[in-house]
Image (tube, rainbow, N blue to C red; front, side, top):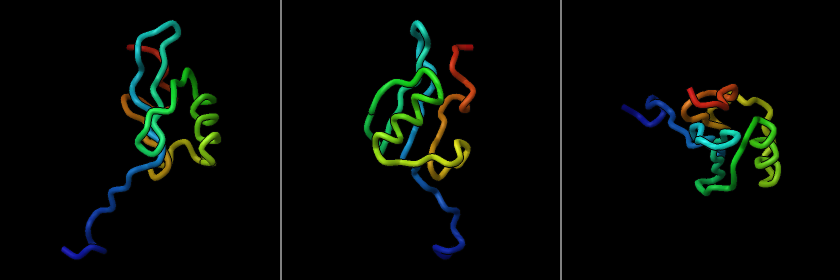
Length: 78
């Protein structure tokens, strides 16, 4: 298989990890492989991205952001 025929696997700059228990529940945000904070909603994720100079135009673009343990609408346990 040539390199051009192989599937492309990218590592997005932003990773939003699964929901953690808390009051309120939160998700850990990583940028460039480092934990940068907690998010309690999409706005927190966008603010963290902006602080690192990342403009997010599409929250569903897997080349930019990866949602682990649920999508951008998952902010509670169960």
